[in-house]
Image (tube, rainbow, N blue to C red; front, top):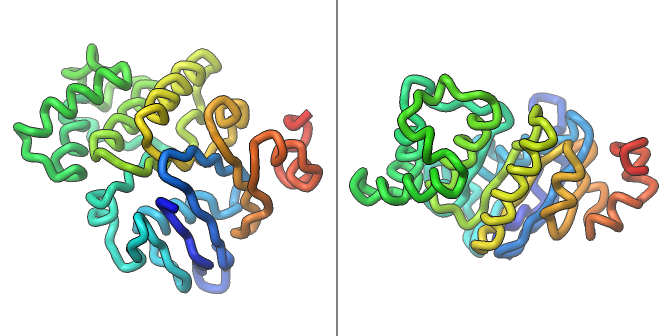
Length: 239
């Protein structure tokens, strides 16, 4: 496994947000994560990226125990992440935002990071906006910039947190094509998403979380047809 969560748990006071969660993703695999609000999905990402420390359990990446590493070290090790609410450096250009990922995330010099940043802008459809201030972008382009900045860190594992949320249907289709291209490059992806049909278009496997635990995992078709999943999360959408 590329990434392994081994019985990780996380509490905030008396609230147990993640409850002995064991989950893994293989190199090149795309894993979708679904579950109701409050299920612990984003907290799980925080435990993977180092933004939060587990109270117990271990996080392993490329077979190495990274439980004690901070977010910057995990990023340099190959874990890239987007956030549910895009938060670019608004006073910097689109290009400068992506260059930050290449220099501080992938540890390139500014000179070596420049061609990488330009290539990532091409891949994500942002090349024509390279000189625009990031704070002026509409939602789709802020989402693409969030993705581009993560890709510039040269990850072997990419964490996507509800990147399709708030987008129109045609924008979601465009985003799906970008993610398919990333997958074709062999980058493993864990994708938290409420837009289930977007996941269905890309993922190899779906895991369902509820109350900080793993409810079910398996092929997208098997998971989404499961009666327990339908009652806990999908409801009428599963039909």
